[in-house]
Image 1 (tube, each protein chain N blue to C red):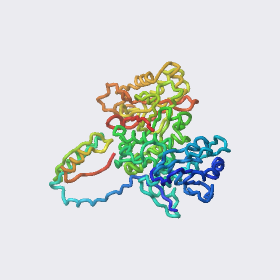
Image 2: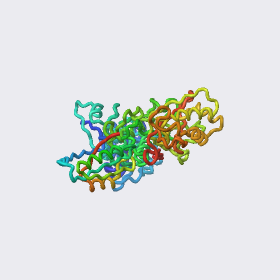
Image 3: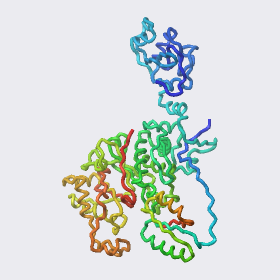
Image 4: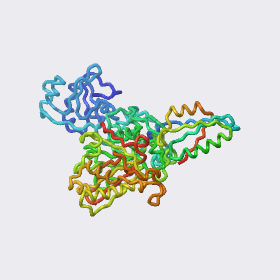
Amino acid sequence: MTRTLLDPSSERTVLQRERLARPSSLEGQVVGLLDISKPRGDVFLDRLEELLIGAGARVLRYKKPTFTKPAPVDLRHEIATQCTLVIEALAD
Amino acid sequence: MSQPGAPTLPDGLVVVVKRECETCRMVAPLLGRFATAVYTQDDAQFPDADAIHDADLSVSWHHDIETVPTVIRVVHGVEVERIVGWVRDQWRAITGVADLGDDLPPFRPGCGSLSVDPDMTDALRAAFSGHTLKSRRLELADLDDEMELMFDRGFTDGLPVVPPTDARVLRMLEGTTRAPQDIVAIVPPDLVEVTIEKIAINAVMAGCKPEYLPWVIAALEAVCTDAFNIHGVLATTMPVGPVIICNGPGTRAIGMNSEGNALGQGNRANLTIGRAVQLIVRNVGGGRPGEVDRATHGNPGKISFCFAEREHDSPFSSLAVSRGFSPAANTVTVFAGEGPRCIVDQKARTAAELANVFAACLRTLHSPKLVLAFDAVLVVGPEHARVLADDGWDRDRLISELHARLQMPGTELVHGALGIADGVPAHLRDVTLPKFRPDGILLVHAGGSAGLFSAMIGGWANGEMGSQPVTKEVLP
C-alpha cells in the first residue's frame, strides 16, 4: 500500500521572471529611492541621490510609514508607475 | 444517523451484530423471524451463512453503529427507527412479533460496535472520510523514511515532526467544530490564506492533541493581525518571536503548565501549541530563517514559547481580564518577545522593596539607555506575588508603582551618558522620560511555588509602528 503524507505547505510554486536588460547609462533615467524609516537612513540616501544626479539621473524619493511593515500597496504602485529604475538593497 | 456516501440499507428490518458480543449471541436465534438483512462485524458465518459480512466496517461506520446489536427500520432506503441492545418490549414493538424472546430476560445491554473501537476509529475515519482533505499528498517510495522526508522538504523547525498522515490529521480535526476548508487568516510573509486543514496538518507535526487545536487556531489568528505584525517580527534582526500567554479554565482542562518550569520544557500542551503556530508561519507563510527571518541571534523560544497564567491562586486579576475579557473566557495573548530573564530578590519583605528591584531590572531591558520603544511582560512568581499581596498591592498598584520608579532623567539617557554611546538626542537632557509607554508593562502570574524569583520578557518595536499585544478568545 502506498504511504502518503499531507503537504503542510502553501503548495505555491514560485514564479521565476526574467530581469529586464540593464540600461547602458543612467542619463535620463528616473530612479526611485525608498526610505524605510530607519534612523539615519536619510543620510545614506541623500548621498546616493547626489551621486545619481551627478550621473545624469532624475531621483524621486519615497518613504515607508514604518520600517517594521512592508511598503503599502499604493506606495509600491506609485514607485512602479513613476520610476524607470529602482535600486533594491537590504541593510540594517 | 448516517454519514454522506453511506451504503444503502435494504428496506425492512436490518440488524447489526458481532459474534464476540454475548447479547448478540443471545438474540441470534430470533433474527430469522423478522430480519431483512443481518450484518455481522467479526465472524462472516454469524449467526448463519446468510449474514452479510461488514468486513471493512463500511456499513457500521457510515450508519453510526455504536452498539451491537442494533436494529434499524428502513423505509424506501431511509432509516426511520433504531433500537440498541436487548430491550424485549422495544424489540417486540419494532418487529411486531408479540411473543419475541419469551424465554429471554427483559433487558440486557449490548456491546460496543467494532466501528467505535478506539483502536479502529482513526483508520476507519481515514478510509471513509479521507477524501474530504484537499491538501496535496506526498507519496513515499518503499525505502523512504518519512521522518527524513519531512526534513528534506524543509518542513521542520530543526526538530523531528510527527508525520501528518490522513488518519492523524482527521483525528486532529475532531478537535474543532470548524470545517476543514474554513479560512482562518492570511499568513505573512507570503500572504497565504490558511485553512483549518493546513493548521491541523501542522498541529499534527508539532505534536498537538486534538483538544489543543482551538488554541492553535486562536493564537494564529492573533499572530496574523496587522496589529501584531508577524511580518515585522520575522524580518527584524532582533531576537523576538510570538510569546503566547494562555488564560481561562480551558488551560487546566487541556493540561497546560502554569506552575513549576512553566516557561521551560516538559509540558506537551505548552510546547506543541507554540510550536504549531511557528510551523504554520514557516510552512504556510513562508517565514524561514535566512530568508524573511533575518534575526541576528534569534532565541530558543522561537521554536515555541507558550505558557498559561497561574490563575487559581493569583492575588492579581488575570492578564486576560485586564485586557477586557471575562475570567470564564479562554484566551490567548500574543506578545512579540525575546527569551525570559530572571529577576532575583530573596530578601525583599515589602511590596515597595520588590517594586524597586523589578524597576531596576526592567530599566535594563534591551539597554538601560533606551526608553519608550519596547514593551515588557513581567512574570511574577508566586513567592514574589505573596509579598506584594501581603501589602495589599493589586495589579494596577504594582504597575503604577513600577511606572513611578521608571521615570528616567534625560541626563542619564542622552548619547554618551553612562559612557554608552547609544541614547536619546542631546536636546532631551533636561527632560524626564518614562522607560515604558503607559500600557507597556504586561503583568502575568506564573511559576512554581518555591523560589523568590520573577521573570521579564523584553518586547520589540512597540505600538502602531511595530507590534502590539493581541488577545483572542479560544472558540470550539
